[in-house]
Length: 303
Image 1: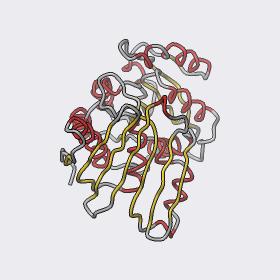
Image 2: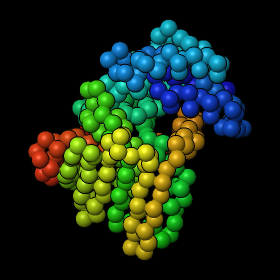
Image 3: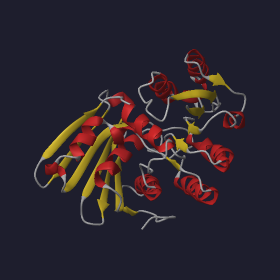
């Protein structure tokens, strides 16, 4: 059996992932896969963390998960780890505890609260030789996967994503929830963004990225009280336009997490992960500069 431990039970993802995994739908000839252990965590200064951790922990108990006293205790009972803490500020410290174990790791969003911390996590993984990745579930929505396989969408010239801006304490403004839309944008456009400009008002944001080949991609982030439509996008190719709206479906992401834990190739290159953080960092700097275009910083691994 592939035994998974989840560190941080203060996110709805921990219960959603576990409910999918405990059904057995990802079992195969290699054997069953189950979440067997978890550590609650919780950040006292993050309301959406500390107010929900007790309820999610109780639900995990009902799903048959052993609740451990420390993150380190989990490592003795599992074959792979999901870092599920909703607070990206704590991910670097968790990585320091988990990466040396040699276990494969999925770091749930956001990887970190800002670019420099994301870079340090990548560097730590390289020093430890750890297999790990991070990704938003939006990358693997079935309609998006099917659309990107469409022959008429092979020459993509633009992508416009809409979603939510919901800042979190101590994070880049786009990193906690806007990251979902930024990751979906990168799943379509790929890496190579050079400049970012952000128009920000009291009702929302429009973040425009210019890629090195002249393509333009945007993220329109509306404040939560301004929209109730979730996430979606319009993809433009030289042959057609496709409009997609995304449900809250974690099946595609969980399938890739399980595949990665079983030895499949990393679904998202770490250089691309860092570029998404460089994109969000540039967006923040552009906002502070009154919407002027800002070049992406090129940290570790960014061409």
